[in-house]
Length: 252
Image (cartoon, rainbow, N blue to C red; front, side):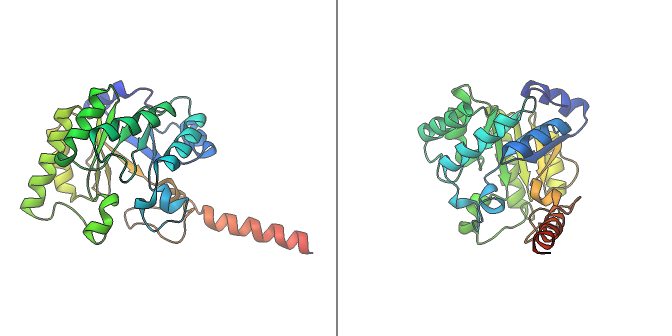
């Protein structure tokens, strides 16, 4: 199991593949850490699966600070990645200031969405000594601009842009890059061309690791689950059963 970001190059070269799950609170983080998950992500997906927002664009820095602090209290080993939320990195200066806020919570590194277009912000973060994780492909924070969640890498032009984004982030010094909703063959190509570890979600099985939203894995958010996420438990069903059993006992 991973204990330091410095282990990432060895894991990319030798395996096994990285396991990454999201955490938004202390008990979940503590359990995932104890289970041996390699990396924990305090994702801005909390906007939807914790706060009931329609997408991630309503997540604020204060929300990310709140949840990152709780997660880091529960972790004794796994490095924690924390998302910079929508509109929190409009300039390099803003990106560094907000990245420092997340690092002060106990995060091991920060993540933002975008490739070549975000290089000034990425370079500023890395230049400030803050470990950085990239995120390319489908970008949830751009869902309103793009009119929905769309698979990337279906055209030659799209592939060219994805490869350029990955290589730019790699050359800037990213320790890892999330590849979201990318045609698997393209994700495989990117993984073989960069030094940074690739972490796939809806991008096939040939990346250096995989990330899932933990409520999707556990079946604790029954109202929506993406097609690539396999629920390995039914926490929602068990919760309803326990609540109804309690109610029946109280009302008997």
